[in-house]
Image (cartoon, rainbow, N blue to C red; front, side, top):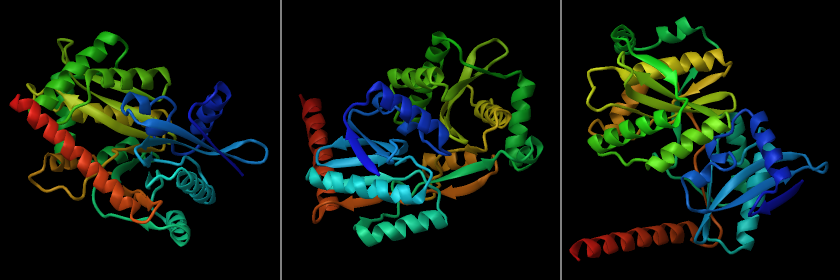
Length: 349
């Protein structure tokens, strides 16, 4: 196997990666070429693992910051042994560059293969695990092999009633097809985030995500319309191999009397099944949320659609030098503290 690290991909590399990403069972949108630049300012390094016949076997995009590197939902591959080799090659590479720390969040569900990967890697390198929401990812998932009636039958009584109410009210759900529709959704999204005091994506990020998914055929923005043809809300869904991911959503904060998001998600589940996807993934269930937390209500909303819990492999925090993970955390805290002091100073002036 030949491991290659690149700061840029040529056209043949991009074609190979795009084809490979479309063939594996799971490829998170964060690992699609061109997507990370929409949300992150980090320097990106590309890792490619090829066999002796130059066929691509594993791939990931690595976000680099000062003396640290992160891989979000990668490396991308279908084989546990290739995952092991990829991670060992990546660790070796960043050690040679005198980095302090590498953080790896695999897109791999727990099970015997995940146990094998973790067991083998822990014999070779020192890995720290933290049990919290940032380092242990879980989700709710619906198996789309079941009939739509069976899926609907597992919805909560409240969710079933909400969907019926939305339909009776005359709400319709359609795919966005114009820049003006995306702009209208942005306005709803920003008003909702402001109303609920939620940290929001910028209008540019929302537009970038929507256009990227549409142009690459990797997702869809579904919009809910009132009988008067006003956009009441919407949701963005990403296609990740055999799975559809619930990426983000928003509903008009002035129309809380209408179950807007319930109908959108139900329509998205129907679409995913008709398009032959295997799973509908709600992507994120915070088991650490308290009843007083806003995310607790998001959990309840997702759980009302039935489904079952899935868990990903725990995030790997890998020290590349003695106390590397500690230095990484200390640097980040210092950086955040400095930003806070600058903001306080700016407000006083």
